[in-house]
Structure formats: C-alpha cells, structure tokens
Image (cartoon, rainbow, N blue to C red; front, side, top):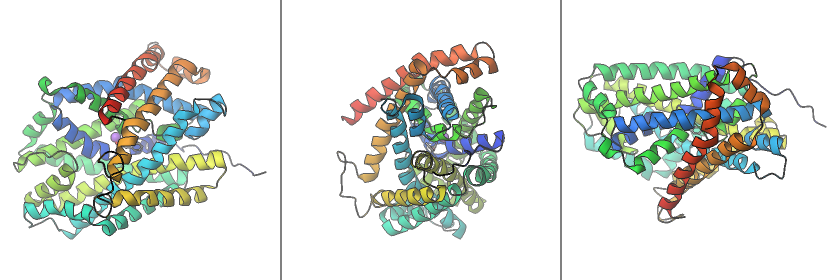
Length: 452
Ligand code: PHE
Ligand code: NA
C-alpha cells in the first residue's frame, strides 16, 4: 500500500492561465505563425486562421480541459477512468501522451538553437558582420552535432529543473515569472516595430487580404496550425486541466488562453515584419526567418545589439514554457498510472527525451544520409508523423468522444449554468459536428499529401 498524497491543483486562476498560455505560446506563435501568414496571402489567411481558432480550437480546448478536470488524471488515465481499461477510447489518450513525449524531444533541439542564438547575441556576434556571415551561422550550427547536443542538453535540464518542482512550486511558479517577462519583451519588440520605418509595410503584409493566395492548402495549414498553436491533441491541456479547480469558469479560462495566444502571434508578426521591411529585406520562410533574416536585420538597426538579445530571450522563454507542458504531460502519466514519484518520473522522461532528441540534433550532420520515411531525415520524419497523424487523430477522437459519447453531465451542467444561454448549445454543436468534420478533412489531405 502506498500513501497517495492529494492531487495537486493550481494555486490560483492566474497561475493556471499563465501556465496554459505558457504552453500555448511557443515557437508556433513567434516563428511559425508570421511566416506561414506571409506565405499564404497575409490578411486572408489570418481571417481563416481566426475562424479555425474560434470554431475548432476553442471548443476542443474546452473539451480537453473538461476531460482533465473531470477525471483528475493524466491523458491516458483520464480515458481509462471514463471508459475502462478495454475501451477503444484509450487510443486518444495514448496517442496524445506519445505525441507530447516525441515533440518534447525535438522541440528541445529547436529550443537549443534559440539558446545558441541568445548566447551569440549576448556576445554581440551579429554586430559588424556581413549579411552573408550572419546567414552562414545557421548552417554552421545545424552542421555542428555536438554544439546542438550541448544546447539540447542544457534546455532539457532547465525543463527538468522546473517540472521536478511539481505543479505549484515548479510549473506555476515559473510560469508566473517567465510569462510576464515574455509579455514585456514582446511589448518592447512590438513598440520597436511600430516605431520603425517599415511598420506600415509590415502591417499591410500581415493583414492585407489577398484572396487569390488563399488556396485549399492554405486553409488546411490554418487548421493544422490552430491545433498546434493551442497545444491541442498533445495531452498538455488535458493534464493542465486536471489541476484546475472545479470552481473555475471553463469558458472564461479557455477564452483567456486562446485570446492571449492569438494576440501574441499577431504582435510577434508585426514586430518581425516591420523591422524586416525597415532594412528592405525579403521575409524568408521556414527556419530562415528567425535564424537568418532576423539576426541580419538586427545587425543593421540602431540598438540592434539589445534587440537581438531581447528577441532570442523571448523565443527561449516561449519555448521553455511550452516544453515544460509537454514534459509534464508525460510525467503525469508515470505518476498517475504507474505510481512513480515525481522526481523519478521527471528524471527518467527528461533523460529519455534527451536521448530520443539526439538523432534529431544529428539529422543535418552525422545522420544526414539516414532517410527514415521517404526521403526525410530523422527530424523531418518524426515531425511529419506527429503533426500529420498523431495530432489530427487525437483531435478527431477527442471531439467525437466528447461530442457523441461522453455524458460528462457535471461538466456540461457547468457550461449550461455558468454562461449565457447560447454557450452550451453553441459549444455542443461545434464539438459534435464542426470540429470532427474539420479535423477529418485535414487528416484526409495530410495523409494524401504524405502518401502513407
Ligand atoms: N503551442 C506551442 C507553440 O505554439 C507548441 C506546443 C504544442 C507546446 C503542444 C506544447 C504542447 O509553439
Ligand atoms: Na502557440
């Protein structure tokens, strides 16, 4: 017999919101959102994205938080608790915990890149360099296995240090420190963007709708990103919901997280494109935007030395609060389902995620010839598997389960009682019909695209 301590809860509503927003606000907001918006016609894409957030993202976030809060369990345990050990519905639990763990392993490698750039920014390595030299740094970094492993190790150690402290003393405490700093950093970079000569060009690039560029592929991209950016389908929100008090207004809490995530993505877009256009550069897509264009831009701007430090600190903090939610999602599984102690579970999984991340860090150097799926290196293969299959599958199952099979009476009562009359029927309609259909369409096209 082991004595089970009462399960942890967030100490305050603000603590929950900052932790959940910390999970949501990540590389997806500051790096990915701006460049996919640029690629897909600016304003028209933003519009579609906002619709996806509202009609698919928000309802599924509410569903995940409801499942977590109702069962007070990790994502696998939640479905076992609801449907028993033999039920098919365990699948979304397993898929999402697996997704959390796998993403944790490679997100940490990318986060390591941001630490490397932060370090260079602090050394002032971007100032007085030619654009070519600065752009060359990124290739140099991805070609350098040991250097990436060092940063990956450091970043994972930070996550370990936070998650081992537990829900209140680790995650909540650090979210309350890191998120306000993140917001302040972003506000400074945003102001700087608005005051720079390229501000108007940046804003029109981001918001002027060009409906001719709005292809079906762009709509799929918007939907996929709505999922990723809100940390859905990855056990994170189920786990964070499991520490949420029953007194909390679910719609209000979810709305705050969703709005924060969206506003931060838009601010980051303006901050980035304004300065890019100020020096007359073209906004690159992919990793190049953050790791090549931005350092070049800052090397040419007055005060760029400081701006570069602020920017990479912002990225590193955003990545850190996201990755701790991924680690926590799998740690909670070992604690709740396997009865492990938190320190043991955290050491084990952070260590394992570090090891699984090694081939990711070596994907563009030592292991560059190792094509795992099709002609994809290891990094691209796991990324493809998780984003194209794991996330949409778990999102699909979760929305079907909550929309069609889960009675969840108390939780639904709470929505009925806690909000205006239209809240429950609207949510129920979206989670029952709209979300599953939308996710199924994405899944279908992703599978066609990868040909698996
Ligand atoms: N939402 C994060 C981002 O936008 C990514 C993430 C997904 C983090 C899932 C945690 C869990 O970058
Ligand atoms: Na996000």
